[in-house]
Image 1 (tube, rainbow, N blue to C red):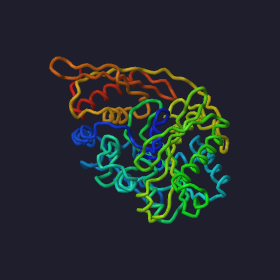
Image 2 (cartoon, rainbow, N blue to C red):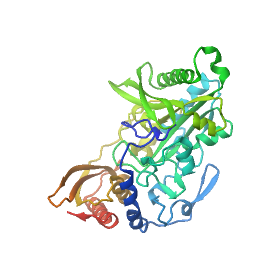
Image 3 (cartoon, rainbow, N blue to C red):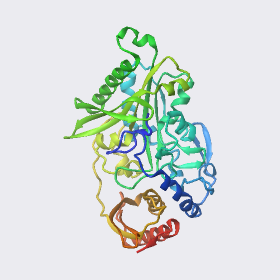
Length: 422
């Protein structure tokens, strides 16, 4: 269940059965409407049509000038790119390697879906996988809302209930997912997940001497240990007990790779309520979720998540269909440029809102946004100082470019977030 996820972050993350870590939900939501009113007015609308999962979508369907919409232009440009469906791309190579494992070990029993529309209802994204009503992942600070009842999926688990209702018992779902997030080398507001589900009936475990839950848990661990060996070779592994809203018991699989423990994925035995809603009242099931970028960065030695989106032939030409684990050779290391910005924050301030503004101005030229200092004065006012790192993956940036970007960021932060610059 990629999603709340088994697969949220890239290198440090909880595999996310893909949820977000706790934050202040009330604070984030209260501050959103003010930020959004200022932010949306800067966006432009075009009439280009996309086809997503067989559905034609226009920009007006996704980016709207209304209070409940927080999807920026930059995010719309990522819709339909589907990096995971490109056989010569690291994400496509990894996806196909995982497919090969399941095809060969389960005799092609797993149905595969990699072209499902990323626009889903809040019911599909949250309610159907038992995300609590007050969970932080529902916040406008964390999720891209098209309107109050429609979102860009936060995880591939958003399709789980529908596939169960349609009668699928063994399936893999791969897709692009969307989260408002920080800016650094391992986080990006669009990334890719794969979720796997396997459903058992009583006859499967009847003669095993185990109850259904234990049988499913043992089968799950054997499956995923085999997958880890398929991808990483003969590595040491360990299981860590965890918590996800949609599984019980829940686990995380870690492997010892390149002299450190690496969290590979999150998984567990599916909550019975989810199965009941899918019309499977006498069954048990397991589910797992993993982040493709998370694993691909390790397997291919890709140092920055922005590279996955590069169209530079010096990057794309290094990878070949079917060749897992080709080591990326950096074609150049252009110098970074650091710019600091200090301001007095207000009660509605969130770092995700700040990062949305920086991305909106600088796009992928923004490499990192880092809080480097904060203090509270005698009047109770709190100041934050952020260091913004600008760097292109493909060329050197000029001083004039950087100064213009930073000036625009400062103007937008002051206007949209209503903070006092220092």
